[in-house]
Length: 166
Image (tube, rainbow, N blue to C red; front, top):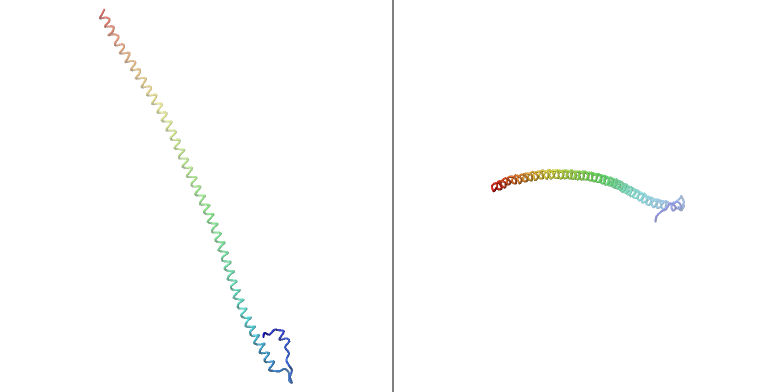
């Protein structure tokens, strides 16, 4: 049987010739003492459990803080990595654009060189044709002179033949 504060308050002792029955008072005090001692032990046990639970809660809170800090750090690292990757991609794109400009510029320079070469070849062709035309004309004149000279040379023979027959 558990003793409540009301039980203690309502407890009445029989009176005997000289006061309360000593055995009954001693038995009751022993019962109160035992139950009070049990309550003290139970209270200590509960306090210890409470301390242990509080320590566990604090440990869990510390773990939670550590996890939050880890997640924040991981998030920062991810953001840094994204920023670094973005910068690296911009650098790569920039380098590719510069390389493309060099290639285009080189192709344009080569085109200009080819056009200049074509113009030079056309000029040389024109010069060659003019020289050839001059050479052909000169040879034609030489041929004409030769034909005339031969024609002149043949005329006196005809004249001589005509004179001899006279």
